[in-house]
Amino acid sequence: PELLKMGSAFVLYALMDAVVDRYFPVVDILETELEKIEDRIFIRGSQRDNIERLYELKTKVLQLRHAVAPLMEAVGKLHGGRVPYMFLDTQEYFRDVHDHLYRINGTIDTMRDTISTAIQVNLSMVAIDENEVNKRLAAYAAIFAVFTAFAGVYGMNFELMPELKWKYGYFAALGLMFSVSGYMYYRFKRSGWL
Image 1 (cartoon, rainbow, N blue to C red):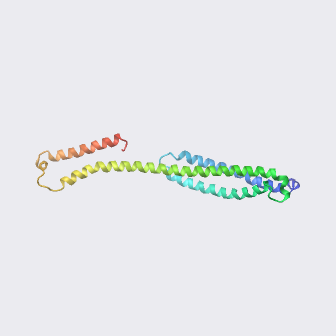
Image 2: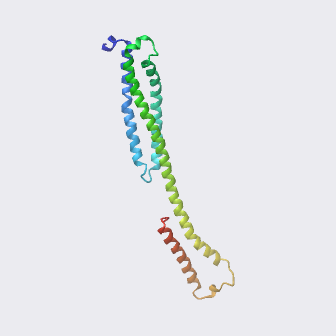
Image 3: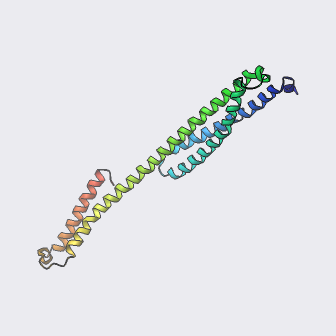
């Protein structure tokens, strides 16, 4: 009843102001959720969960943007004097609502950019982890290639292999295989590949 005494334009302002003010807690919740995900990005093993949470958050932010965009346009017309004369005395009030919407929209844009960056960083972390695994696999493959090469040479069944008739030939071949593999393991370990 009090609002009605001030006119229909003021009632519309009060309604829009109440609606817009309810977006601030939603924006705060989304920002807090984004900060929590950002804190987890560099924790190993959380990449898959982070991606899922980031996409869920991105969807929520887009829904909020779709809710705010039409209001910005409508309030922009109301405070910009592009409506009938009955709204002239409330233009300043609508400017306040428009400023709130502008701030909310700016926060939404910032969150969208941050989410996109977080997704890229998260994917980079996954790629780094995969590269580490590939390095280890390559190092172990190189070590086992020594055994494969020796087995290939000694499995050819040539008769003219002097070390086959030597009493210590078998032990020498095994010793050489393990020595070369051990040296390779040592070098890979020292260089950080293992």
